Image (cartoon, rainbow, N blue to C red; front, side, top):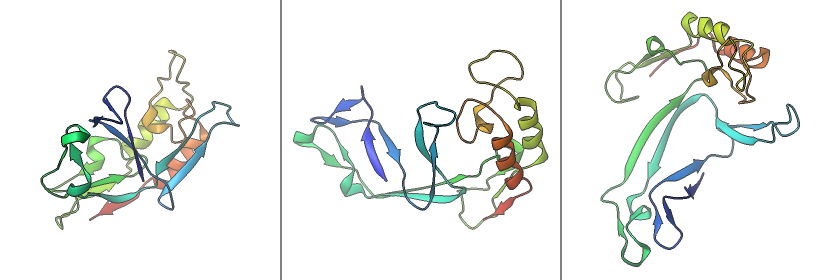
Length: 161
């Protein structure tokens, strides 16, 4: 993982207040829309799973580099990725995420119905069906058979942790 400072939120001398985290490796999906459909964008997404981001307080600094201080403590943040789990009814978190109390994530019929409603959409066109980026897995600006087939692969998946 690499962290890149966001332009306009600081600089290399005084530091940044916002960063973009870029993930690489076995837990990612590499997407290359540079050749087909010739959008010129290449990026990675996280594979479906439960993740934990650990931040070491002594490596995260606040203030200008000349007189920066470390953050008070180490931090840990859990988050999940499951393509197709987009409806509020699909997500049931009981307390802190993955704390031993049963949490549930699923890809339900409601998600499939929502995908059907946006199927065939094209991001730049205002005409129905209305484009919804949550169902555009490869971010090519269209909700097409490629996206729907990946949603079918996740349909009915239910995670409990």
